[in-house]
Image 1 (cartoon, rainbow, N blue to C red):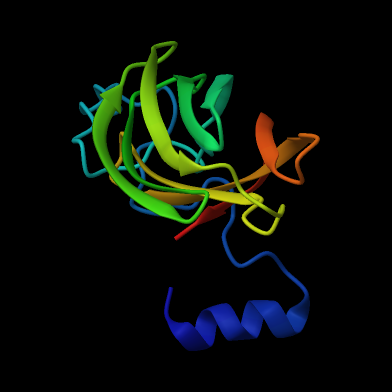
Image 2 (cartoon, helix red, strand yellow; image 1 turned 180 degrees about the vertical axis):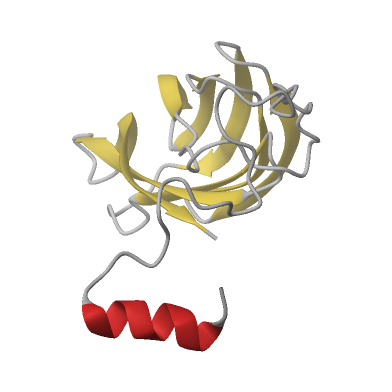
Length: 166
């Protein structure tokens, strides 16, 4: 059926294709209909919608010696697939982590060595990760501080605030 034939049926209010009309598709029960075997997905193909990586700071341990503070964190991958921890910004310092975490895996990192902060101005932590499909994600966390009597602060915990696909 040509364009004008289909247009005429539309104007008449009739269905454009009849159920018994040959559309070039094999019909159910015909001898030429064969099941199609699923093709294996390549690493560049996406299966389903994007899934945000679930990466958390499980543990934060900050030790002080006078005004000096050292912080170690345990970062855990709670995603279903592996993630590559790329970059981390923490208390004004930058780190190239370059570490792959499998699903459920956790690893410790020393992320700060310096004077205790005098304010809570650096309360934002940025973590860039690459998921198993090659997508980059920016994860923002918030630092909860504990005040020390001398006007300085110690990192108490780190909470996830926002995840963004970049």
